[in-house]
Each structure stands twice: as structure tokens, then as C-alpha cells.
Image (cartoon, rainbow, N blue to C red; front, side, top):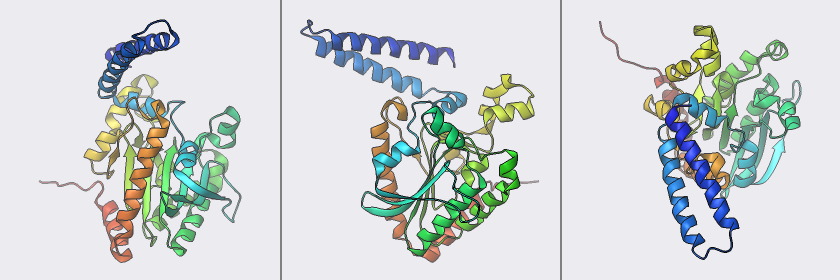
Amino acid sequence: MTKSTEMAKDAILGLEQRIQELQNDTEQDDSSVKIKELEEQRTDLQKKMYSNLTPYEIVKIARHHLRPPFSDHLGLIVDDFIELHGDRNYGDDNAMVTGFGTIGGKKALIIGQHKGKTTKERIDSNFGMPNPEGYRKALHKMKLAEKFKLPIVTLIDTPGANPDIGAEERGQAHAIAINIAEMSKLRTPIICIVIGEGGSGGALGIGVGDKFSILEFAYCSVISPEGCAAILWKSKDHTEDAANALHLTAKELYRLKIVDEVIPEPIGAAHNNPKEMSRILKETIVRYIEELQAIPLDILVEKRYQKYRKIGRFLGGE
């Protein structure tokens, strides 16, 4: 954390403590006026602090323990959710949640990576790192959505796919590759939004769509900054250098035309106002669905294909 960020954070904590003291003090007649002034100061400091974050500081915010996970957004955004289990091959995967529901009156298939909140939930969901059966389950449900002509919404939040031996033995890389290939040609609208961590193939396995967007303080990268530092510099001391080099922030991804939109977060990031974040997310998803459903399917699929063919294209000369 930079020195300016540390100073701003300390100042914000001091203001919050003072606000709490005034809220508990019933004897001061002008406490409401003072509280409002302090809240305005806090808001200004938060805006300043969050506008000057380094890439690795943004990674830390994306991993914040209070940042609303998929399960929180599911409860606030989706009505009549019916969860669907299993991949019809090996088993179920708690790290990948799939099901049908309604978002703002629009029926859709909702898919998301579940990290869990409690220690037990995190262990049961493998800390949001899906296994091959999770990706096969997701694809099976996507084909159901295609059959019923329903849009697909994926909310991505994973440090990466499970890299252990069991997952590799059951075809982890193959499962992700098949998902990428199949999602590129599914004849139904697909909306993908990174809400926290967008780690490597773990994100790509449910990350090919007509809309690929990211929350303001989320990140998406081929590898974590820690993993990159370990490989290139052989030392965790270069984690911040790796984060800078990876261009993993929402702003950089938009500049590189990898994401279609950076979805704004409430002041102080999503963990500061989860309900407001869900409201913004819901409005964005409904807007995307309405936009994509107005496009003929043949054109939609061709545009999706061309969109991903263009990523990484550059002009060169002799």
C-alpha cells in the first residue's frame, strides 16, 4: 500500500470513529449537522483514495473479505431461483452454481463461482476454484438455456480453476477448452461480468459472451500477480511489479478493448455498499439482455466470434 493510500485510509477511519461518537452522543443539539459535514469529508477522501490505487491495491480490493460474492448478488438480484446440480458424468461441484431465475422480469440461466463466506463454506466450495465437473455442469445448463431460448448470465469470481492432481486427471484443461469453444457458438445471448477475481482459465471457462464486462475494482488476468512474480522474478517481492506488468485492472482491460464496459461501484467499492452494488449490477444485466435479444441470432453469434478474434490484434511494420 502506498503512503498516500495509507494516510487516506487512516483519515477515513478517524472520521468514521468521530461520526460514530456523534451518533452515540444524544446531548449535542447540532450533532446531525456535524455528522453530515464529516460524512461529506469522508466521501471526498474515499473518492480521492480510490481514484489513485495501484494495480495491486485493486487486486486486494477484489479479494476483500467483505466484498459481496456471487451468493450475495444472487439473493439480491435473482427472483425464483431454481438451482440445477451435476454434470451427468462425474458429480456436482459446489464451486460452480447454476440455475434458472428471473432478473428484473427477464428469465435467464444464471451461473456463478461460489467462494463461500464461512470457513466450512470456503472449504466445501474449494475457495471458488472449480473442478472439471463444474465446467461440464455449466456447459450442460448453457445448452438447456439455448434449447429454451433463454439468455445466459455468468458472474465470474475465482482465483483460478482447481490445479490439483485430481482435477487434472479428470480433464481440467479439456473441460475449459470445450467450454470456450461451445460458448463461442451457442445460439442465445451470453452476458459475462467479472465481479471480483477473474483468474486465468478459471474465468475463461464461463467467460466467453456477447458482453464481457467488469466491475470497477475487480481484475482479470492470465495469472495472479503472486504467481507471475514467482515465475519471472523467483520472488514474491516483485508482486507489485507483476501486477503493473499484467495490465489486469478494469481501466487497462477497457483500454485494451478486452472488456466492453467498466461497471461503476459505489463510493468506497462494492464492500462499502453491497445492496447498491447489486442494484447497479441488476440494472446493467437487464439493459444487456434487452439489447442482445433485439439482435437476430445469426448476427449475434457472428459478432461474438469476430469480437474474440480481434482480441490481441495489432498492426506491425518492417
